[in-house]
Image: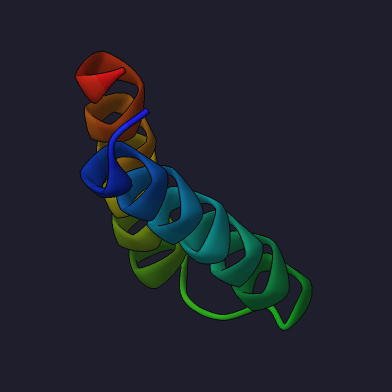
Length: 50
């Protein structure tokens, strides 16, 4: 496992936590969706680098 893949996976999980937090705070849907897309892309990049 390379350092880059671990970094991408951790970043994706961090952003996913932000999505959950922003959703609970009732922030605008556009912000939550954009953060969710970033999280999914980061997790996908990390998993593909494995």
